Each structure stands twice: as C-alpha cells, then as structure tokens.
Length: 341
Image (cartoon, rainbow, N blue to C red):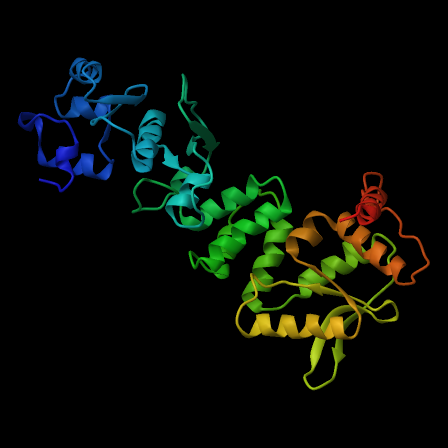
C-alpha cells in the first residue's frame, strides 16, 4: 500500500497495484478514461462527487479525495483535461524545475498544434506547439519539456527584454542549467523572440567577456543617437588597476556594461572598488546590462545624454528613427529630476 493511500477514497475491493501507482504519481487525480481502465464507471465517480467524497476539478477529471487540491493535484487535473499528449509548460514547468517560485495560479499546458482543446477550462492556459515530441523530457513527471526548452519558451513569450533576460539569469543563478546547454537549445530553434539578446547574453556569460554587449552599446546607443564617442576599455592605474568599459573623460561620466549573470565574490568587490573610486573622483557611473541595451537602447541613450549635457556636453542627440523615444525619454527624465523628494 502506498504511504498516502488512505487519503484517497477508493474502495479496497477496487484497489490494484497499477492503480495505486497511478494515484501516487498523479497526486490522487484520475481521468474518466483511466478510471474505466480499472473497471470504475463514470456513474460511480459521479456518485462519489455527489456524496462529497470526490471532486471534479475539470471536465472528465476526478480528484479521489475531499478537501483542498494541492498544487500538484491541480497541475495533474489540468494535464488530464487537455489530453494524453499534453505536458506542463512555461511558468508552471519552470516552477516544477526550480527556475522560479510559483508566479501564476494558472496551469500552463502545451499540446500539439494540430489539435484544439475544446470546452471550459478552469484555471488553465493552453499553448500549442509543433515540436512537442522533440522537446519533451523522457523521464520527468508531471510530463514537461526539457528545462532548457522551458526557458526558451519563456523568453519567446516575454513582452520585454528585461523579462527575457531575467529567465536566463534565474536558470543559471539557481544552477538549473548551464550557458552552453541553453545556447545549444537556442541554436535548435528556428524562430524565437529576443534571439539576438539571448545569444549575446549566453556567449558573454559563457566566456566571461562583454564584447558583444559593448558592440551593441556602441552601435545602437552611442552611434545611432549621435552621442559623444566614449573611450572604451580605458585602463585606470592606481593602487589597483581598474578598467572602464566606456569612459567619457571630459564629462566625468562612465558607463559600465555588465555582461555577466550577477556579480558575486571577487567580481562584486571589483565592481564596488570601481564605483567607489568613481565617487571619490566625482564621476557619474551609469550601469547597463543586456536587457537595457538590447531592449530599450533609446532610453539608455536618453539617460546618457541627460547626464552628459548636465556635465558640459553642448551638443544635441538625435532620434535613431521615426519611432525613437529619445526626446520623450529625455523630457521625462528631466521632469522627474525636478520633482522634489
């Protein structure tokens, strides 16, 4: 007898070894089809629900116990409602794999694109995909994609570069995966939103370099908006040698481009030394990562332009195109600066 069997309201005469194993694996939740495989009719299940001993969280899905459903039971109910090929995905899969804590009460489920889940769904968000057999993890239960595929799904559905970058940061900082594995999965995707940012970020993280991020800053922030050219990778000697990513020496302003996922250990000490040295030298330091440079380069340019102008730069930056938010962002920044604390 499984250790939690007493929590499930199944008559002893109906209990079989396979049924015990299924109830244990699926947190006490069974579909009508599964019940019928063990000789339990839908009429019997409905009678149990009327008696208050079972529940029906989804159509043709039964929880074989009374009381609140656990999170795992809720997930299994959603999966069984969506059909045999369904698997947990997106935020729910990330939750199960430890990439994030629970951030959505809904259960995200993905099914094959060639079919549709019809009828009412309680607290379920259904996604459709063609690649399910290729991305499914062969062993994990509840069924879900390989962790790297889940991260890529979340990147693809992110509305902002900052959110997309956050999924990469979470997966790596929580030691759920490695940059090389994410990069390999990314290479296998034909279409994905935020690809350029994700590729640059993973390469920078894997190699500890920031060349791609610096090149993007030069192209999309500085040159595209006509900002004053900065001195790149400037070496500053002192009691300890420090390197400045972009230094606007004559305007006492520095830009630091953080290509690594989080700064810990010696890296954090180097950052603090560099920033503290800047304060001592009365220099302003602006710090940006992949999400800002790739996701909102116009706003980055606006911040830099305001600081440079306040420190003596007398030229005017230019919008990078018809939809550029440079001028609006600069006006907003200057307006916020005038609001008293």
